[in-house]
Image (tube, rainbow, N blue to C red; front, side, top):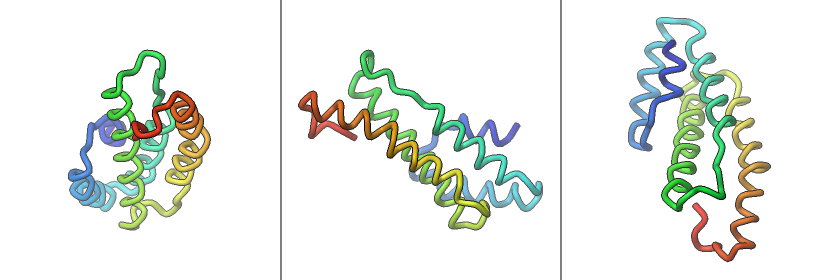
Length: 117
């Protein structure tokens, strides 16, 4: 249940360091906790979708803010030694390269070059 709660949490960048410390303590107590959390965070990141047609600029900002915070949390978990494999973060980077690049190109064609987040 805890990995799913971490997945659902709405984190700010300032919260990431504290969350990593909390995850480290939980991992010390419960062996596979960090790996399960890493997989949950990866699933959340890959499952996020942006409805471009019905999205306001505020929705777009929130979408990318959420993705940035999830990627930051995964990266900090790797740096802290909680995740043995960088695979969850690599999957997220690959998703950014493929999925979000298509959104970026559409926005460039639409004349929104300065408004991409």
